[in-house]
Length: 193
Image (cartoon, rainbow, N blue to C red; front, side, top):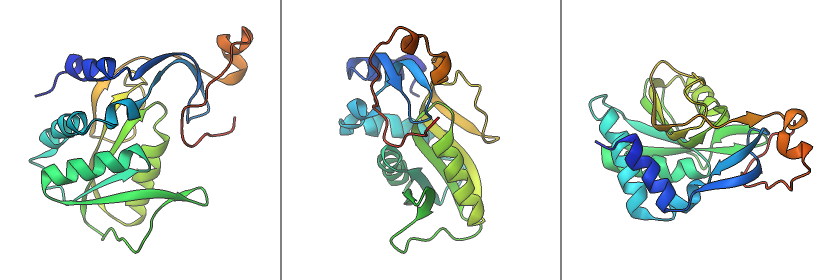
């Protein structure tokens, strides 16, 4: 069993917790950023973190693990590998998350949705919507880090390996913007606010 302190240590020793002024993928601003790719570049860390997600769902007869691009693909693959099931990838196309390349999620398939860092839950919600559209049997969700402090509740069973309360701000209320501090855009898909 992997503890929250052990998960935090993986991020800290990977130099994945950054401080500054950041525009998150959600469009909100924050003084900290959890750069998952500093962790995900190390296969041993990916294997360790995904083993904990797989452990939490090992008795649930999962048939497919679904993850959003980009970090969620690595996690979906490794969790699926450890559970001995298929992995599917929710890619963006025209603003929507879709299964591409002829991949299919059959109705009734017992599905686990995984992602890396959750702030507002946008990517997880998009995956939940995609799975529901395909009439999958959604068993639960799992993320490496829940930055919302547990306030984002998207599904009845929602697992986070680490829960932190990271303060975020709308751009018009951001104290870093008020100080004219340069902003960094580390995320991959920004929502314009």
